[in-house]
Length: 164
Image 1: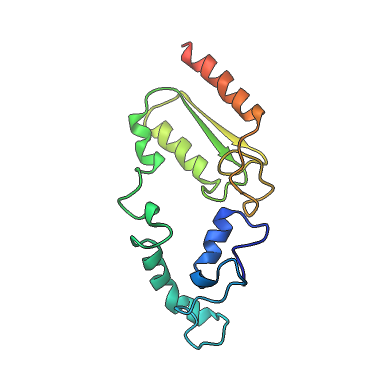
Image 2 (image 1 turned 90 degrees about the horizontal axis):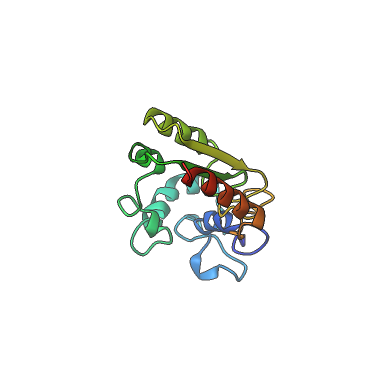
């Protein structure tokens, strides 16, 4: 069970890290002892169900690997900020974004519409990941840089919308 190596993207590896012993990551990872209550080196559904809350509590604690995303530490969701954005807005979403679900783009569009901002353009970028770089799937979303075409599209949108 080594979720820290292979072709999976950063989000997939983060997910695997919840189930692997942190001391063994990258060296043929072993099951996280906190979850493996019967010490058989494997996880069954009961062990995961009983232990995942403890794992998540730790992950979102100050010593955890997702502390930066803990409640009260991040900026408000974009859907909550929509009402304060009266200027033109361009929303770019990678089709294979492993961090932000594609269905979120519809909720964001609805939030802007509810706030009365009609100057919002939403673009789903095929074959792109969270950082708008190439990604063949959410698992392949490795944080690659956007290609030149993405920058050109943004520049064209800026030129058209800043001239208003």
